[in-house]
Length: 310
Image 1 (cartoon, one colour):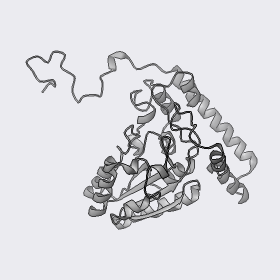
Image 2: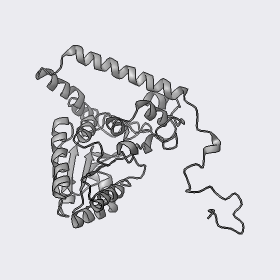
Image 3: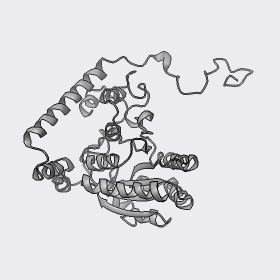
């Protein structure tokens, strides 16, 4: 994705989640396939973990008609309703009330689905998030608030943006079971989300989990990432979740070096295939620019009539 962006084939912004793999995979692996999930604009990994076709994801990043959203969503707005992934959002904190609504729908309809919303520590400062905490605690909604604390809101370190640097107590103030875990440890994340989902599913109690993590790239591709100290970045890279989990698997004898090499080769093949597919896919026709914007066609001549046809 980064290479395609630098080549000028990805429009708009591009936010990479390199370093946050444990938080993403650990979360999704703890959920049922029908549990609704919302995320932020850094949502490529969530779509992949939910099973969205890599071809459709890459095509969406390139704005092609074969993209998962028909080329209209782009990098920040991937969505796959068939897999209960209700999307990434360009508005900071904008997906949290949607997830709350999905939780209310589950409660109202009597299903045991658990709504999960992933958002950053920066979004935790949005007023709507506190409102959602209150409603979830008041109505005992089956929702898990997942605060992915990567310690920087764009280029602002958490200590310059928050009076209290732990964020899970904010949910606890609304009588929501809340705790903090290592977001670089995929097994710790999975265990925490499994318990949070159990509370929501079996006891109709909301939960909040804060994951302490670190992104290895800047806020977006347009961020030169000069704010963070090199020593700090290297310290966190030494805890790379992929390398750490690889060591666990090797140490337990679950997998060997040959199997790891085979998986890496398969990943490279999938990436190359998705990239080629996206490049060769057609652009979205200009004639379809206004499709899916309004529920009904726009009235070309609104004089003397309503803008929308009855």
